[in-house]
Image (cartoon, rainbow, N blue to C red; front, side, top):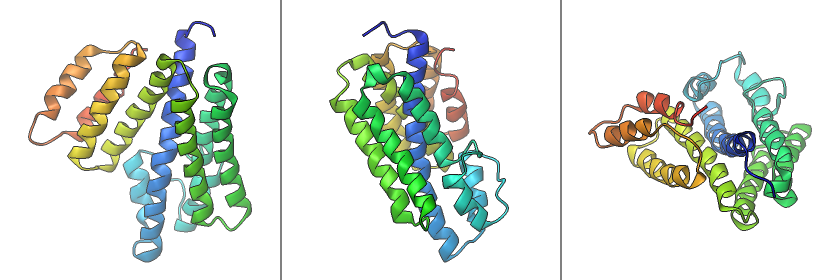
Length: 222
């Protein structure tokens, strides 16, 4: 196995980010769908606002169809899975074919759901395969740095989304603590002053979610 170059680190990092983006946003999509069906047909507008994407859907029906399945929508579930796969295939020799195969299975789940009746249980299969992907990352990849770079991407993406969705402060602090562990072990270059600043902010009585999110987006050195 060759040296983990800057480009390879970037592929691994974004592999972690895109898989986590699908995992968290798909779970939020399920909750939002329940809300739209039961009480608030326009809740998709809040969905878009919270996760920071443009509301280009127009109606509840268009959103529920396009957001999971539209490959021409750069923010859709299938588009983010495709981006994860693009990074995985470049790093196949580093992560293993079996690990990569679970992302392909998650993509297949989305396509199968689209060809069927687009039922929520069919879409949920993709979450199972993403979880299997994470299991392979832990079980199959021998190189600790590779594992930790992927997990760092996952951790930063999860924190970003949790902050966007306004999850409780305890959840934010727990995920931040986990992310910091992977940050050190990944050996990636990062801005230490940002960590010091966020550490200080987390000791305050009320967290400024927006400021923390903006800081995280500049954490990893370009």
